[in-house]
Image (cartoon, rainbow, N blue to C red; front, top):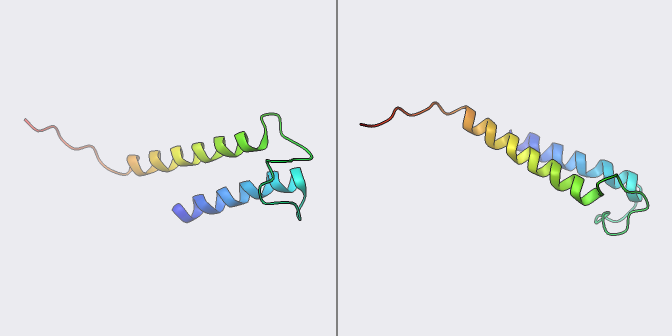
Length: 71
């Protein structure tokens, strides 16, 4: 699951980079983009990372059965 999330993050990161500075542009594409999405490339990336972390936490939490209360 973690490799899938890391792969999705890398693939998602490459797409705005390709659109903002091109294929041969700098890795830190959010510093001087020629084009920018409505929220800005860095904020969009941060939101995607936060959503991915939330999905992993939810997935890990949902697989563990609830413990019975101790009396």
